[in-house]
Amino acid sequence: MRSKIHVLLVEDNPAEAMITREGLISAEILSTMDMVSDGVEAMDFLHRRGRHAGARRPDLVLLDLNMPRKGGLDVLAEMKADESLKNIPVVVLTTSKSREDVSRAYALHASCFISKPMDFDQFTAAMRTIRSFWFSVVTLPK
Image (cartoon, rainbow, N blue to C red; front, side, top):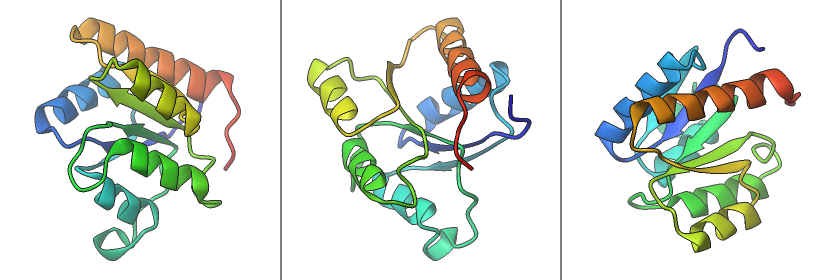
């Protein structure tokens, strides 16, 4: 497993962001995490523009779908169309359980789609599964 994992969390709800951060810490997936609160800022971060000029490239993006200014599906489409970003794993992590959202996310090449469990233990278990799969089982590009 990689010793240092850098996660970019794209989440507009501060309470959800806090729960996600705690879940990542509890699942021992996190070395560092940056958080942005909408899709426009996510793209600035990923392209290292403006106040994110010195941003570190994330090993994994956790992406909410319903956000202001630019939604998660638009961010996903932009990332996967960009040669410099398309190989970053993107886990859609959202409260949506819509079959349409699931289908659209996979059509845009999401790495996986997780509907946020409401129970913290279930959420932590989901984060451990992410850690095990993405950072122990698969080989990621540098």
